[in-house]
Length: 459
Image (cartoon, rainbow, N blue to C red):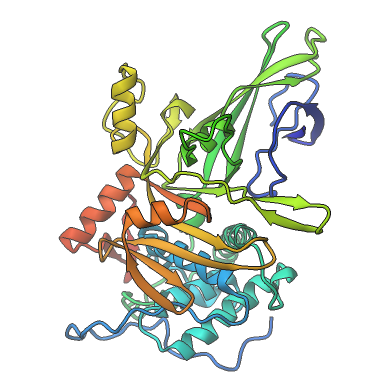
C-alpha cells in the first residue's frame, strides 16, 4: 500500500504494507519526505431572537424540564450526534462561552457565533427555537462546505472535521479583526453568565482570544525518520484535531481487539523507502510520538471500505472493544507536553502485570477516559442512522442522544452495545476529567469576572 509523507512542500512517495483506507486531510497522518535533511519545516436572517447574549437576572431554582435533544431536520442525525458530543465537553463549552468574546465583531453567519448561540440555548429553549438555531448552524457550515447544504445523509466524521477546522478559522479571523478595530469598539457579551461592561470602559484590543478547538482537541505528533544506512535523522511535527485509525488487525478471533490496539497500530514503527541525501541510502525507519497532548483525544475508527461493485462505502462491522481508559504512555517521550501538569514520571519502571493493571484502571501517566461515542447504525456511509452516547459531567451519568430523544444509560452498556457500531470516540485526559468532575462536585463554575466579562480560568 502506498502512503504519502507530507513534509513542507517536498512530496515523496514511499511504500509500505498497510490496510488503511484513505483519510480526510484534517485527520490523516500525512508524511511526505524531502530528499535532504533540512528540517521541514451571508445574508443576515430576519429572525434574530433578540437578547440571546444579554445577561439574565438570577432566578430561584426551577424544576428541570425533561431532557430533549435536537430535532432531525431531514437526514441530519450526523450533525445532531456530533453537536451533542462536542457540547458535552465542559472545557470546550466554557472556552466558547466564558472568555468574553466580542460577539458583535463576529459575523452573524459565522459558525463560531452560531455554535455559541445554540450551545447557550440548547437546554432552555423550546424545540422550535432550537430547530431554527440548528438550521443556522447547518447554514454556516454549508456556506463553506457545500456538500452539507442539502438533506442527504452525510458522514459524521467529515462533518466533525469541517466543524473543527471552520471554528479555528473563525477564531483566527476574529482575533485579526479585533486587533485592528478601535479600542472604543463596543463589547457584546457572550451568551449567559456574563456581566455588562461598565459605561465608558474601553475594550482590551491587545487581547488574543483562545480557540476552543486548539486548547481542547488539537495535539501534535513528531515523526522521526532515520536512515538505515548512515543514521541521518529528519524530524517533522504535525498538528491534528483527531486521528483516523484502522480497525485492529486480528489473526485469531480471540482475544477481541480494542481501540487501544488500533491506536497502538497507528504509532507502530515503520520501514519505508527513502532517498537519503547524505549517503544515498534507500531505506529508513519512521517512528511517531506525541509531542503535545490534547485535553480531549478524538479517534475516528475507519469502519468503511469502498465496494467497487456497489459503488459505495460499505460498513465493516468488526467487533472492537471500547476500553474505559486509553494509555498513551508508550507513544510519548520525556519532552511530550501534557495538557496539565502530571503528578508522576511517565517513564517509571514497572513490570508487565502492574502496567496492565494501571492501564485498565487509568492510573498510568497520560491516561485518557472515555466520555463520548458517536455510533453509526446501518450498512453504508450514505444510509443508516447516527446516535451519540455522552457522559454528562453535571449529572455524573451517561446519556444517549437519538435526535430529539434522550435516555439514560450505563457506561458498561455503551461499551457492550457500541462495539460493532462505534465510529468516533472522545477520550478526555484523566487529569482534566478529574479536575472538571471536582469543579462540578464543589459547585464551582471555574470562572472569574475580569473587566466585566466572565472568563474561564485556564485548566
